[in-house]
Structure formats: structure tokens, C-alpha cells
Image 1: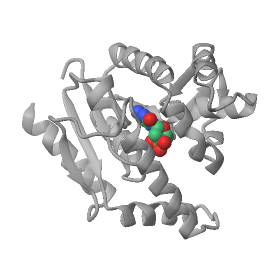
Image 2: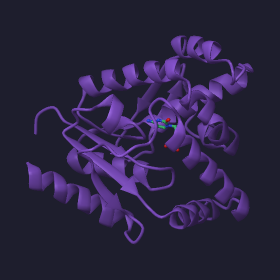
Image 3: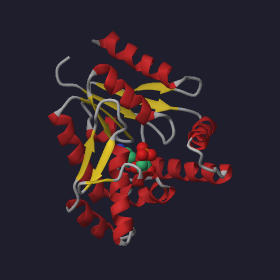
Amino acid sequence: MGHLVIAVDGPAGAGKSTVAKRLAKRLGLGFMDTGAMYRALTLKALRRGTKLEDAEALVALAHETAIDLVDEAGRPLKVLLDGEDVSDAIRTPEVTNNTFYIARTPGVRAVMVEWQRRMGEKQSLVGDGRDLGTVVFPNAAFKFYLDADFDVRCQRRIDELRAKGVAVDEAALKRDLAERDHADFTRKVGPLKKAEDAIIIDSTNMTIDDVVEALVQHIHKQK
Ligand code: DC
């Protein structure tokens, strides 16, 4: 198919990462979870005690950080922060709830976008995030916007956590997701927005397999 970039954007809990990873595997492409990159820098800032309100300090931190994504067949994506495997450490509620400081800082986004573009130049890939179709890869061959009703996104998160044996405070989870949506939709730089040429998939009543199949159909139709 030649060099190919496929962008999958959408709100938290819509299933983007799982879908993007499976799609990448189906098509034999790389997979880039951009949320993992924002999370990794958040983890570093929290560990260092960097003031999260201090934009300049966050940008300086981004410049002295190496984040690598290692995508090995049949394994979950490995996230390396300055060489350390932080794949699990970036999924804690503390990191999740503090990522918006990193995500709202324009200078940090500029660094992230550059890293992501470089990855997309090196290899064909499926990337998932918020601003891939609008900012990072405006010329992506395919842009998908994966949506789902708020309640369904909450329920999926609850089921996911329960399956892992984690006790869930449903009201707190709903509040956190609503706050993340608000932060994603309203930040000044790189907000979550449907690209004009994005294909919108509403996964409210679809399984992950259905969604992957729908994306594959769209891609084959246009090839
Ligand atoms: O996809 P995720 O939930 O792992 O993303 C973590 C956070 O990073 C989320 O709060 C929004 C932010 N993010 C972003 O601002 N831009 C991206 N391209 C990806 C994620």
C-alpha cells in the first residue's frame, strides 16, 4: 500500500487504543498510542515534583525526555520513559487525572507533535489520540473519529476495571470522565475535534471487532 498513516481520534473511553492496535496488526502497520506519550511525561513531572502549573518547566522537561513506544507482536504496547518500562505506571488514576496539565501546554504539544510526525515519517502506522487528524497528520490517508455515548464509555471503563479486579467508585469515575471530556474539548491548542474529512464511527452499539471490521471496510473501499 506504500507509506501510510491512519489517524484514529476520539474521546476517552471510546475504544481507540484497542481498535487502533488491532487495526495496525490486521494491516501489518506500526501502532502509536499518543495518549501514552502524554501520560509518560505526566508521570515524569509527578515523580520530579515539577510544578504542573509551570508551563516553562513542563516544556523544559519535555526537551530533556526520551519516550519510546515498543510495539512487539502479540504483546501490549511497551512504553519506555528515558529507557524505563512505565507501561503500567502510566495507567494509574493519579497520572490519568493530571495529564491535562501536560496536554494543555502548547510548548509541550509542539514537542509531542514533532516526535509523532517523526515516527510517522519513519514507518507506516495507525495512531490514536485527540489531534492526529487535525494537527499531527493533516494529510493522513485515512482519518477516523471514534465516538460513543458518554454512559457507554463509562460502562466500558467500569467493566474493564472490574475485570482486572479493581474496586470501582462509579460516581467518581463518571465525574472524572466528564472532566476529561471537558478538558479535551475546550483546550486552546490541539483540542479534540472532528477533522472535516474524518469518517465518524459511533461505536455505542458496536463491539470492538465490529469497529475494526468497519474501519477495514472503509480502507479497502478507498484503495
Ligand atoms: O488516550 P489517553 O486517555 O491515554 O490520553 C491521555 C491524555 O492525553 C488525555 O487526557 C488527553 C491527552 N492526549 C492529548 O491531549 N492528545 C493526544 N493526541 C492524545 C492524548
